[in-house]
Image 1 (spheres, rainbow, N blue to C red):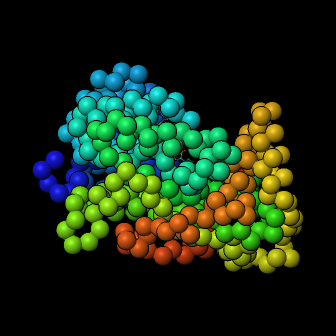
Image 2: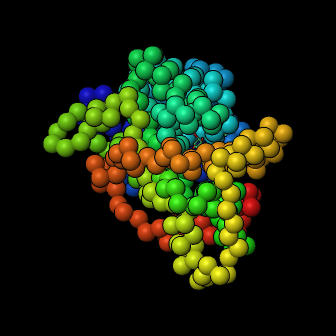
Length: 318
Ligand SMILES: NC(=O)c1ccc[n+]([C@@H]2O[C@H](COP(=O)([O-])OP(=O)(O)OC[C@H]3O[C@@H](n4cnc5c(N)ncnc54)[C@H](OP(=O)(O)O)[C@@H]3O)[C@@H](O)[C@H]2O)c1
């Protein structure tokens, strides 16, 4: 790469929930050419203006071929994608000469040892970061976003709020603050990071974040804050809702047990309730976010709650 800027970005998972938003945000900058790595069997629709390159993740040479000439690789593959695919992507990126990788992070704080011990999905994120560093051919910037707001608020067993039936379960007192990001904010973060100069000019640069986990959010709020927003957006008051309380620890443990018995709602309860523990593991704002450095806007929580309300009408998790 001779320029001090990234212009060619490959995305694995560009047709997905978050990949699509990242792709659209990158396209909006007008500074990037986007290439989507796509499986032959993919049924996903790519945003207009994206170059599609077919890959077979079991054939590394197809990934190397698709990545040749790219400056950066963003990975936003489905969370259940076999881990070997991440590792194959890192290796192929190294072989193809891709300098920067945004790995499949997009999660709460996976540098928090207690959190990754308690949430079994998270250790792979740490392993990914280490794998890229160990290969030593590309650098990474991993982006911790907390759980996604409009996605999570639309799932009653996640943030504990049922926007349709007007019921809520507060974990403990419902006052523990957690950090959460909207999809547009996630997209803006990716676009802002990959629009930075690589080395310093007269402000922040990508090298400042080299091989780091960076934190970004839209809101750091409690369940009660979300509920207040739900009241405003649905035109209701507390008396229109049935609100109960449950110990966060007991809910986590119950969820874990139910998950082990094959209950998918148990999995959701385990996953989400853990970040509401009073140990502050869900609060990434307290660790320092890159929001200001990247010039990200402050958002209106009610606008995001409206999106969640619309999603909750069709959510398969309701
Ligand atoms: N923070 C949060 O609240 C939150 C919530 C959900 C997920 N996440 C995380 O965000 C990341 C992306 O999730 P997402 O919901 O955006 O993904 P998604 O929409 O479920 O899937 C993204 C893409 O992954 C590809 N894909 C699906 N199954 C695959 C497989 N078996 N092998 C290879 N590729 C496969 C598909 O791309 P093609 O068909 O184009 O090949 C799909 O469009 C994951 O790391 C996940 O853990 C975070």
